[in-house]
Amino acid sequence: MDSDNVKQHFRPDEAPFIDQVQGWLATATNEYRPVLTDFMSPRQCYIAQTLTNRQDEVNMASNGGWNGAEMRRLLFYPRYYQPLSADFDIQLLTISYPVKFTELHHRQVLGTLMSAGIKRTTFGDILHQQESWQLLVDSKMTNYLRQQVTTIGRVHVKLLPISFDDIVQPEDDWEELTTTVSSLRVDSIVAAAFNYSRNRAKTAIERGFVRVNWEEVQRPDYSLAIHDQLSVRHAGRIRVNAVNGITRKGKIKTVLNVIKAGK
Image 1 (cartoon, one colour):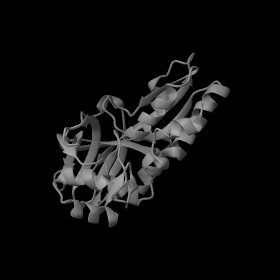
Image 2 (image 1 turned 90 degrees about the vertical axis):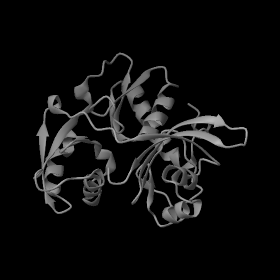
Image 3 (image 1 turned 90 degrees about the horizontal axis):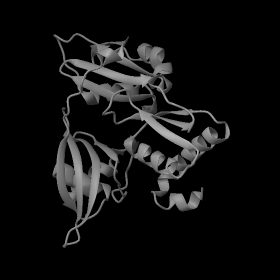
Image 4 (image 1 turned 120 degrees about the vertical axis):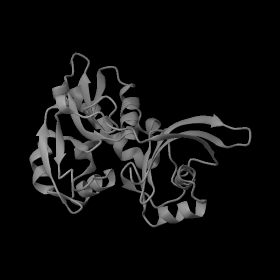
C-alpha cells in the first residue's frame, strides 16, 4: 500500500493513526492472526475500514457492545477467521448509586472517568435509560476501573459487572440538524450547531472548550469531516453525519446531530 497516496485523502494530523492501522493490518497479514484494538471513535472506524477495503487478505469487524455503539473495538483478521463476540473482550458495567436521592448526567460520568486518568480508548459508550447508567469497557480494565471510580461528582457509586442480557436500550437525545455552512471549519460547525456567533465559537475554541474526537482543538480553522465528533463545554455535543454538496450560493449542505448540554 502506498502510504503517502493514502494519507493525502485524510487530514495531516490523522497520519499517525493511519500508520497505526497499517501496522495492525500488516500484523494480521504476516502473522496470520486476529489483531484487536482499543475503542475507536466513528472517524477512526471510518479510516480503518477505508484502509482495510484496500486489502485482499484481511477483513475488519467492529463491536461496541450493542448495535448502535459509537465507540467500537476493531478486529483485523485473516479471511479464514470467523470473529465471535467474545473476541472483542468487552465487559458491561452498571453504575450503582442512590437513585432516590440524586441523578447523574452524561458529562459527569465522562468527566469522572477522564479526570481519573483513564484513557478514552479503554471504555466505549456510556448508556443511559431513565435512572440506569452503564459502561462498556475493556474487560482487562474492569478491576482497575472499579477501584478508581468510587464517586461521580459528590455521589458515592459502585461499578458492578453485569451480563449483556441486562444491557439497557439507550435513550436517544440526539437531534438532527440539516443546515448550510460557509466551510467545514470547526468554528463554523460549532456556530451552526448551537446558534453561536462565529466570534463566540472562535473564543470557545481558543479557550480550549472544544474537543474533536476527544482531542482538544484550539484552532478555529481546523477542518472537520464526516464522522467527526465534537464536545463543546457548557454547550453539548455534535456529530458530523453527512456533507451533501454545495448550494447555488456556495454554501456546504451538512447534516449534524446535536445534543444540548444537560442531557
